[in-house]
Image (cartoon, rainbow, N blue to C red; front, side, top):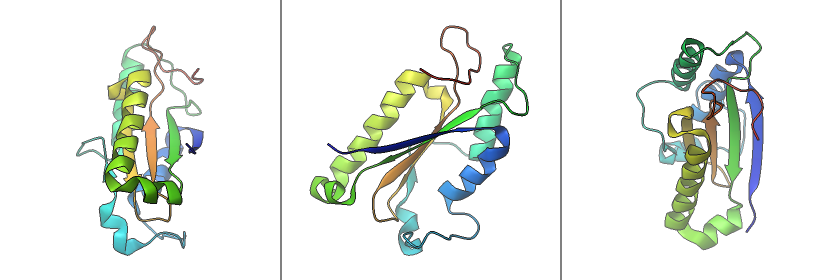
Amino acid sequence: MELAWNTQKNQMSDVKGKEMEQDRKGTVKNLDIDLNRTHQNYDLVESDLTLYQRVKERVDFAKETGSRVQKNSVVMYSNILTVPEEMAKSWGEEKTKAYFESCYEFFSGEFGNENVVSAKVHLDETSPHMHLHFVPFNKETGKLKENIS
């Protein structure tokens, strides 16, 4: 099976930009996006809060539990998990959805369900993909950590 996975470290100042991108707010410059299909996108993390508010809530908790959070601290990892177009077509909608749910469950198990702040599946582009964001907490210490392993 083919999988494209891209990950990026983010500071608090990056979070609103990631939110704009995943929620299709502002000017959409990517010509591969079909705005007529954007309503098909969905988030596996149910919340009334924005992505920024979800991350800030976890960062505030980190501060309360003794983490030293500075302006340049890594507070969120952004991941894009992509299923190639041909594979998604052969799998069909249900198997593709189950695949993204499995990815979400894996990240929740690895980093804690409360730390996976968004898992937004985009079906409005050529290849289905998921923007999955998590706040990196160390399970043993309960503190924010910049590097994950």
